[in-house]
Image (cartoon, rainbow, N blue to C red):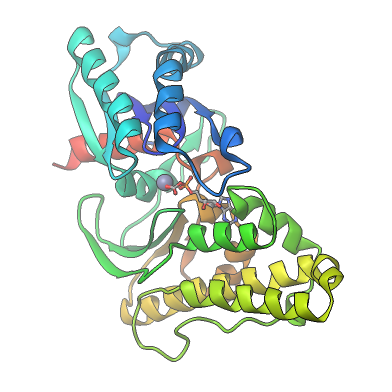
Length: 329
Ligand code: KG4
Ligand code: ZN
């Protein structure tokens, strides 16, 4: 089954051709993030205008790279939400028009189900065919959401916990912004933290003694704000000298919070075969290492998307989710 997936929920314009929900024949991602680097977020109207210009060239390139034409496609899948309204409209209107002209079925996909499906994606060259096995505990962490799911099948998903305030990616972005880094701050903060010592500035791990499976990050952001204020009042140069260690402490607290919730959920769901981490923040290696360490000797497999480009928003995950929805519904 060959599906063309289209994703335009934020500033990315992405199209991908995926075979049988896993083999990625092509995945093109255009992004206007660079234009928003000096700001602390995307300007929705601006992003949508850029997407109007990029959507058709991206789809053309994607079909060309996959070596297929519209006739070989079995269906189209498009992100139906949630996301920026103007951006979503660019994707859905384009997908609807193409499905009509090409006479193909079109399926709307929830953005989160796209991320949840991203661990099935394999590069064309990756011959290893080790498909994930349910039941799966999936932590979905991006700039817009932080959710913990218990998954029995592609279409049977139970939400165990969510963030009560900021999303994990948002916490990275806001922390990075306080440290003077560009948007989106997650990747830059991880690079900066790599040179630092997390023990120098230990941050409190949120909701540590709480029995809930929910998340909270706003307290961490406030701790960082006050720490920077205190340090600046002692010596303004001190922050610059210690920036990497501050970033390392902040990152470690976010990752420990996420790992704690995964372990607590596993204790409540015996028989879980795999833990998946998906969404933009799943690109973070410190998070992966923290969870890996906690899962050691548990027999539970840890999976993140097979490529960094499948962690952040992409059309391939939408094509995969669309395939599973058509198959299972
Ligand atoms: O899934 P995504 O591309 O878009 C949303 O649906 O939000 O996630 C983007 C988020 C941003 O907040 C970005 O800072 C974060 O993922 N992110 C990271 C890393 N790479 C991306 N956060 C921490 N470490 C990273 N390496
Ligand atoms: Zn996303």
